[in-house]
Length: 66
Image (cartoon, helix red, strand yellow):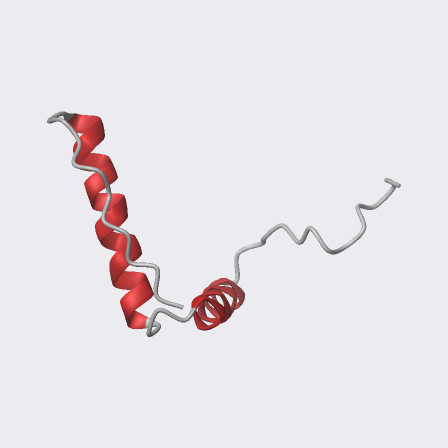
């Protein structure tokens, strides 16, 4: 599913520059995966796995919790 939505045209300012950069990166990541959300998340999970850094898994029960 292609969801290439153009962001609203912000006023000038640092926060606006940050938003434009976030939208640009989002569009690049989406295009790199053929705008396939399942593929995007599969690649993100693989990247996380290969990084060797710990991550949160909300599907696993919390130790000592209910």
